[in-house]
Amino acid sequence: MSSEVLVVRYKNAHPVAIKLLNTNQFKFEESNLRNIGYLLIEQNKAPQALEVFKLNSRFFHECPNTSYDLGDAYAELKHYQQTLSSYSR
Image 1: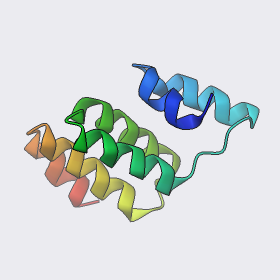
Image 2: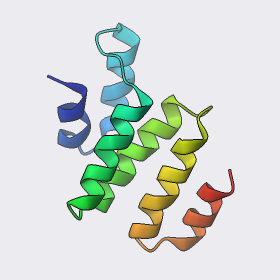
Image 3: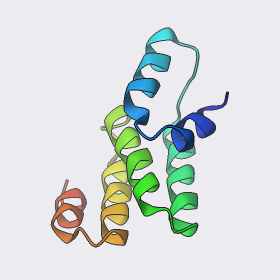
């Protein structure tokens, strides 16, 4: 099963992704998860996109794009306080 399917399929993807990373069976890349998140936003699936961006932010916290992407998902959901917080990181 590809990482894309795992992220979209599981409602609570965080524990599943962490388990897979610990077994070295899958390699997640920041750009892949970012693309998945924006595809979900384009499909009007902002809650799912938010979960993907949360994963991306957790795994690639050193990359400034992940905070910005997280802010975009919060903005889509009209969670403006979290949007501002994400953009300011």
